[in-house]
Image (cartoon, rainbow, N blue to C red; front, side):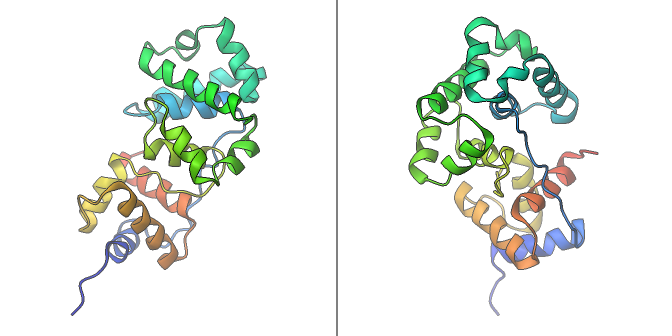
Length: 202
């Protein structure tokens, strides 16, 4: 008897733990300052109580940062750590570096970034930014409306519970993508449902 694949294990666990769906994707942001800050600041923070209110306030306080160039103009004269109320020089530096890269590549709007991420070379350039790993690149894609799986600690926990532990990042991402296809779910929607289930997000 052939052993089930990681995708099959994940699909079975999704059905057992989460049911049949449908699972809605969160949609991300149209405000590029929020996209960049979400990607730079969210890791290892409580998203709903800590990160989300700060992103909403940033959009209210910096409405002109809806584009990448507008965001960079704000960064030139104002302190991002103060605006986000986070004392994290490393994460602030990551946000600045992502912004500079996107401006240099002519990426200014949500749609620009959505399209730009189609190209492997562009994703590789983003990976070269200090503080940006493969998960962050996939997460940024979801923040601008792409349907991707960003594998974090919660998705790894779920996979281990399903019987598929310790897979390398790209192999586990592929397994989640294949599981979504097996079940007929949209990738980002299923990913977000798994994240909410494990994180305990309301």
